[in-house]
Amino acid sequence: MRPLIPLLALLLPLGAGARQIDSLPFIRPPYLQAGDTVGIVAPAGKLPEKVDTAQIRHRFEEWGLHVRFGTCLNPDKKAYFAAPDSVRAAELQGMIDDPAVKAVIACRGGYGSVRLLPHLRLEALREHPKWIVGFSDITTLHLALRRLGIESIHGPMPGGFRFREDEEDSSESLREALFGEIRRIEVDPHPRNCYGEARGRLAGGNLTVICAANGTPEALRCDTPTILFIEEIGEFAYRIDRMMQSLERCGVLCNLQAVIVGHFTKTLGCDRFGVEEPESILESYLRPLGIPVVFGFPAGHDEPNLALYLGREITVCVDQTGARIDFEP
Image (cartoon, rainbow, N blue to C red; front, top):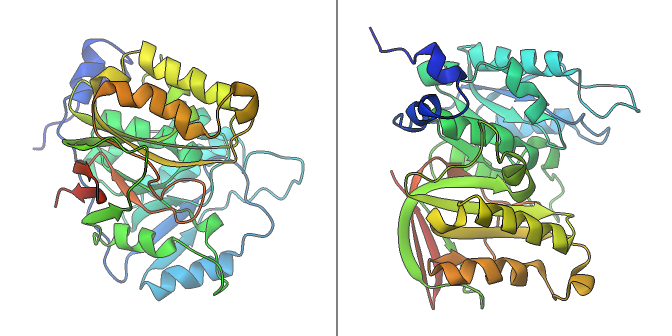
């Protein structure tokens, strides 16, 4: 019989129970194969009317996959969430528990994934692992999965797929991640890069969501070698500084092996805060750490948005020629 995770350990948010969970060996879900089924859900905000589910289905079928859409498509124009919390959670849990579904993909983010956590049994994924995919607000789920020792995919969501030939679209990166084809990502040089080489387990996602988890069971802890990825959209410069203060004061930054900085898009109030761009704020915190830092990584709320395996051991190498991210096979 396979050993079961003690229920008490899964319920304790901090202390010995949390350490026991964090020390579990990481599980890698099986990569997809042609003929597999993916479930597409809306764990947070409702889908915009412009989202074309027919084209989304066609894209996945081109990859040889079947699609099962969730039913949380709230028609109420005044509603924010795709459905009530209990309904969204039940739909997500149903996709997790269904053995026919090999990956569960958030159609969009928004806000609301954190409201589902009390209703979810994510520990089921340790017995029957499958990929959970998304970014932005879905960072909440990635953090919860990290605590349970389960790899996940930070990557493009179908609600943001672009279908016109003249539009840049990163959905191919998602396909590569789902089928296990991503081994290395190379990035051009950036003037703010900090040179060096490091190895650790990749964690992170949206900076706001990471900081919002501080003090909760999903808080990012770096007791083992960790490489942090961060991205952001639409935040004021002073708030970015405040979030970096939070990571510094709670001890996250000082325990990192390397940092990968993705898109920081549509940042507000830089002039008032006395900076030209948000990267200068980040650099002021990251360069003194004396660890490798990659700026300009193509992931986040802009194109290209390359998929990343969170929870995976990676090696980061930064030098004059640029940066290389190698994922453990």
